[in-house]
Length: 296
Image 1 (cartoon, rainbow, N blue to C red):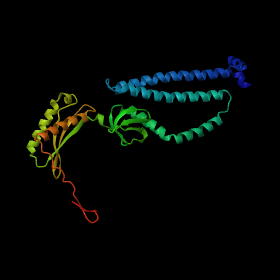
Image 2: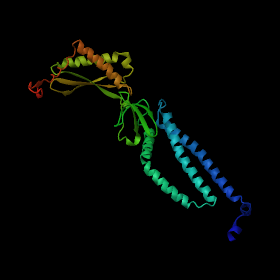
Image 3: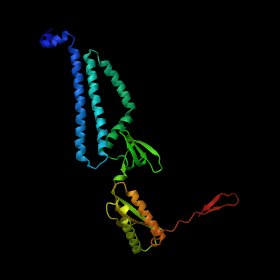
Image 4: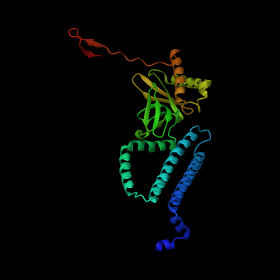
């Protein structure tokens, strides 16, 4: 009775008319709605400001990354807001939520234990998008698969390898990521016979480098002049000679193909001497049982 007397008269009237509980529920739902609107606007503005500072204007993946991160963050925060609102509404209706909380805890624990791999994949995928580790069109090595990325979701990456096989790699299983499209330099190797004269080799490789730059199609993919590194390895019958070149991201394979064609032409016209082919294995058979006895 004392508590009722200390309440304002309008509160007592609402309680008398059985309108206080519906009003409280309406306020809870209104606050949840306002929080949802605020979260949608705030997440979008914050991420837009972050991406404007961290991404270049010509980055084609920035907008796709921003949308993916915005949707995942909004879904998580809005889910928390409305879960809290539902629990509050149930308590306002006079229902004991202790039993519901206990059951929800058990069910949530079971679901969390069973879906821990899924949760790990989603969390890892969130940071893949946030860090821009790779995106559609990149040439990547994910450990489990290597090839061109066709699609990146919050849980998996779809990669097509050189044979045309499509691999679906969960982000949580990726220990390391090698993004080959972001490498700005790459080696151009040529193997020649060990007997080839060193000054002639340097001269021919310099001519091949100049021819590579003179090709208009290749020049558009280069980011600098090729630099002759020199001899990288000496073997019994051959020498490995290397040239290093800076390319546009993701174009190193095309430059290598053009380089190999130039090297083949140099072998064909005698400017480069090819290493001697390894001798084939000769198997001696015992005529009595036709079983291999020795190999030379």
